Amino acid sequence: MLYHAPRRRWGRIFSCLAGQFLCAASMHLFIVPLGLYAGGAMGVCQLIRTLIVQGLDLPSHTYDIAGLLYFLVNIPILLLAWNTLGRRFVWMTILCATAFSLFYSLLPTPAAPMVEDPLTACLLGGMLNGGGAGLVLTCGGSGGGLDIVSMCLGRRGYRVTVGQFSLFFNAALYALFLLLFAPDVAIYSAIFNFTSALVLDRVHQQNISVQALIFTRADEMPLSRYITNTLGRGVTWWQGTGAYTGEGVRVLCVCLSKYEIEDLRHAVYTMDPHAFLTVEEGVQIYGNFPKKLV
Image 1: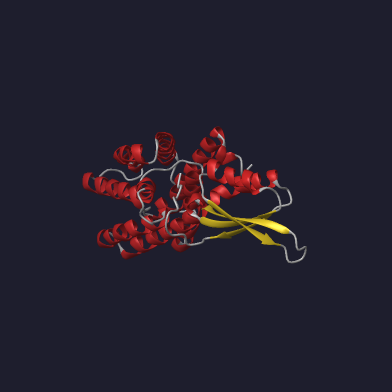
Image 2 (image 1 turned 60 degrees about the vertical axis):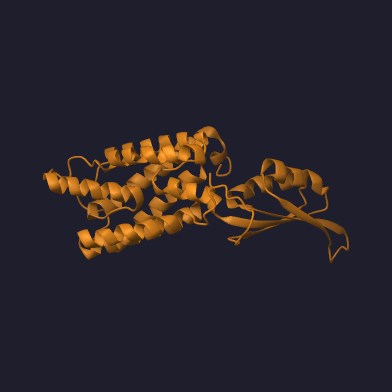
C-alpha cells in the first residue's frame, strides 16, 4: 500500500490531504496555543496576523486569518512555479494549499495547551509537521510557500534541499521574531522549525540520493533499457565473476532517488527473481545528475 499510494492518482490526492491535515493539526495543537510561530511563508502570515490584531485591537481568538493570508501569499509563488515545475504539480499544490488554509482556519485551537512544556510541544509539533509536509512532497504535491521556492532553485541547478533552504530563510525570520517578541518565543519557534525541517528531509524521498548495485546472471539489456527509458537515469554495467561459484555475473550501477528505488526493485525482481540488489543511501553525487524533486 505504501508503495502504490504515491503512484496512483487518488492515492496521491488522499495522501496529500492527509499530510496537510497533519501540518495544520500540528500547529493548532502544539504551537498556536503557546503563542509560538511556524516558519517560512506561514510564519510570515502569522506575524502579519499578530501585527494586524494588535494594531487594530481585535479579539485574538475569534478567527485566525493566517490561513487566509497564507492562501493569498501562495498566488504569486504558484505563478513562479507554473513554468518551472510543471502544470500538474502546480494544480496539486493549489489543491494542497487550499486544503491547508481550510484545515488551519476551521480547526479549533485548544483554550489550553495540550502539552504545557514548550520544548516537548515544539518537538512533537515539529515531527508531526515535518512528516506531513514530507508526505505531501513525496506524493507529488506541495503545501506551497518555501517548498516551491526551494524546488524551483533545485530545478535550476542550486544544490540546496527543501529543508536546508527552509533553515536559511527561517534563521532571518526568527531573528526578526527575537527583536519583536520575547526571546523564548523566538527560541521555541526555531526549535519547532528545525525539528520540522529535519523530519521533512528524511520523509521527502525524492530528496535523498542513493546508489544501487544490481548483480544478475540474466541479460542486462532489458533492465538497462528500463532504467534509461522509464526511470530516465543513466546506468553503467560491467562483467564480474562470483568468487564462490566462479560463474560470470553482470553488475549494473545506477544513481537515483530513494523514491525511485521501489520502482527499480520491482523491475529487477520481475526480470530476474534471483538478482542481488544493494542500495547505499545518502551518497554525495556531483556532476550531471538531475534531481527529480517532484
